[in-house]
Length: 348
Image 1: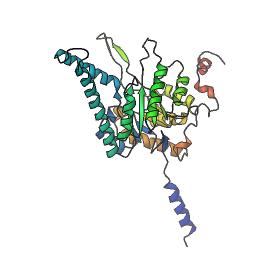
Image 2 (image 1 turned 45 degrees about the horizontal axis):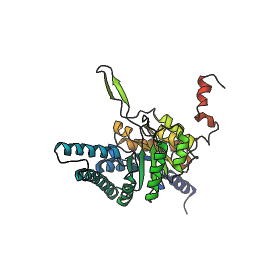
Image 3 (image 1 turned 90 degrees about the vertical axis):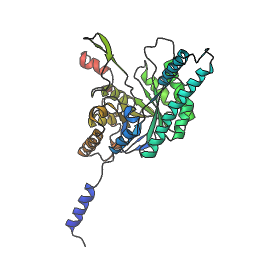
Image 4 (image 1 turned 135 degrees about the horizontal axis):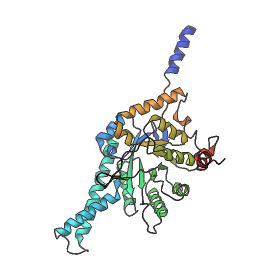
């Protein structure tokens, strides 16, 4: 019969072997941790995707296929055909051939990437469609499903500087509804914060049947070079302070929609990941930090996350999720604008 000392030692070993559970649910998928590789060049080839997986990434959103890019390619080839006198009228069959050929080549390459990623990795693969219309993308979404994608992320963006009378909100709803009705795999929508009534738009989107929302898109920003007197691109990567607006909206929307929420933009550390989960995010998407610090930095992020949870005596990630969302905190107005008036305007 073992001595009391032996039994106590055995218990100690068993307790020390308990692993911190970083798993989470997102879009109905079980992820081994909350960190997803956002759509970028890093998720546009199988070599990089496999390196992301080996360093602990939970899922990848493949590099987006852009509707506008295909349209630009079509226009370029059409001009070349006109210059070579291959087209004799606007009704020429050459136009239809160019349009079909470019679309088929681009779409088939994308479907091949999905198949390869599913064949050579074990992590969920989320396809990304960056579209501005519902013209042909509905049928393409069905092809994505057949290729084996685990989910689809609709990266919707209509230019906020457009001064026409387009109903942007209606376009978002139409595209989302049609895709959801066409496929059986989960659909998420990645949006920008540029809406007059963002909460209303998100509520309407969540009623279309989508299973996730990604907040927020980060777009190209121009800057001015004073020496050359030219307009130049600003820093293409996010910085570590850009997470704050996302954090606010994640906290405000958590428990108010039927969709899973994923945070993206400005997530450069385990601390920021933890904050977004506490605010109510199911997962986070990262890209800039992987460019700035390398894919190997993933293991550091995950280890720092695990260490923090152990220090705070959290055994699983679900214990964190939404713990500090607006509905859960003592002072819900902390996430609202009137706090600005209170602290900076002398208003009580």
